[in-house]
Amino acid sequence: MRRSQADKDVDATVGTNIRRFRKISGISQKKLGGAIGVTFQQVQKYESGKDRISASKLVETAEIGDVTLAFPDHSTAALKLAANFDRIASSEQRAAIVLLVAALATPEE
Image 1 (cartoon, rainbow, N blue to C red):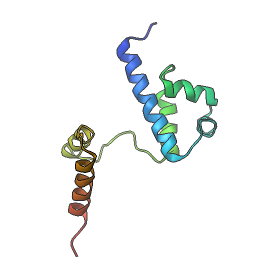
Image 2: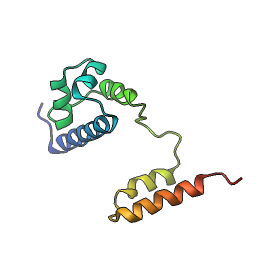
Image 3: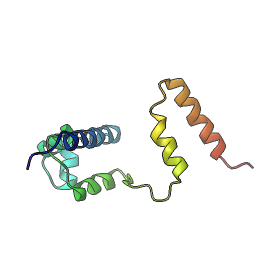
Image 4: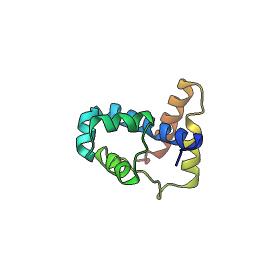
């Protein structure tokens, strides 16, 4: 069965996020592949969106970096904030929002 363009777009987005996670974590494709039981070439295919990663491999990948794939304990407001945060063009404004939220979340002594 051929994948639709929408499916390909989703696979590419997931792959991009896997690559980001891997690079931020300082993990090589070989090390990630070994940890989830695939070759580094397969990791390359996941990251490029050429191959679709299974849900079980995605969960394994997330567990390596202690990443949560779902947000069951987050409020609707928190999810809306996260969804819109990257739409803010100014990096200075994003940084200010991070500081504001951190300050508001810090308990008063």
